[in-house]
Image 1 (spheres, rainbow, N blue to C red):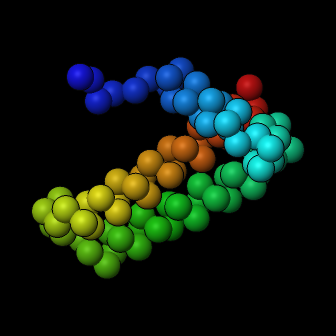
Image 2 (image 1 turned 90 degrees about the vertical axis):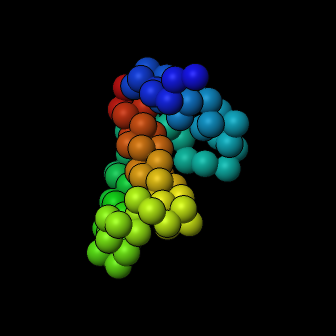
Length: 88
């Protein structure tokens, strides 16, 4: 099982998730891209906070902290993919 996902797969996943929630989420159009960029920056701030407060050793060795760190990194990727889809 490969753990890597290429950009095309990630963009497809983003679009499929949006399709599932399009009645609740904003349209996937360039006009809404800036909002998602701001959400992405907020998630980057959460990653920075974990790195500052916990450090690399805890991120790598404490399963709960590592899980939280990876979750925030995935959120960044999700918002980035959404922005790319909004501008395609």
